[in-house]
Length: 328
Ligand SMILES: [Zn+2]
Ligand SMILES: [Zn+2]
Image 1 (cartoon, rainbow, N blue to C red):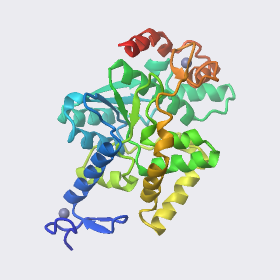
Image 2: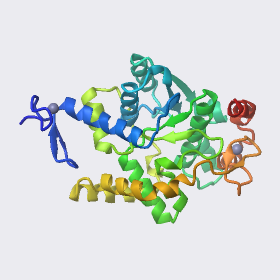
Image 3: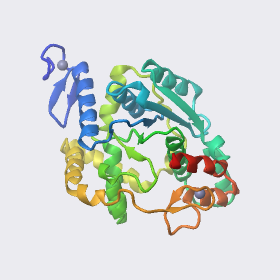
Image 4: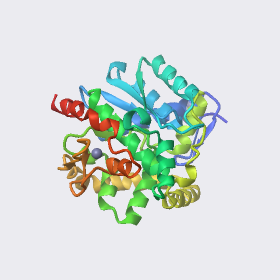
């Protein structure tokens, strides 16, 4: 059977949501064109922007890297790879493969470890929390640390956009979880119009309309040397999200395209409300200088680290540098 798009090569991929049978090349092109369309639709990249891409080394991050590298000049792109410090999960070869692939597009990747940034690795945080009988999950420590590393380096490197490789499945899961929690701001924050709070770097998610199976298929066709090791803390993943994930998977199987249509619909409906979040005033953590909710004494990361005995996180000493970068 021939490809529904080019009619030249044999069909390899059945794209359930479009009902098209595509050859490898047309499938790759289809994904990239949709990524670029999404970037344009929400003006994710503006003239003069420098984009810092958070690259985990997994399938999604390779798709992000390639689709942006084929669209924008390499001088406007930077990569950031975060080593969490989870034995058996972070492998030197994976980071090396990522850096090499980026280099083939003339994109530099900065590799930063959570330990050098905060003073403790994610594994150390988790074992200390357990020892002290704290209930915080590994994912909380990991997620907060990674987000902070990204925000810090986006500013420190002078990037004006921070791109993450969240895919359509991730986005819809987060939406549903936030709806179930009654977190309206969380729902609006997913919208590309929500921008950055005062003084922050805007986050963009170019892959937000690409299904997870599509990023996996893309990476497989391209033969990327991606990280496939599963995180040993996978069982600590919030249970609500895991439940939503499996239900959404069933829904999509029953009615292909459901997730895509749901996000497209919410994008149209929530745009105006989401714009109001742009440049929202926020408080500043007295310990590290990072932006935080004005109702908090310390930011969530400083508070968590203090609870496990890290009262002077390394990043707190970098606050002068952060300030300077905001001022520039
Ligand atoms: Zn084709
Ligand atoms: Zn803080």
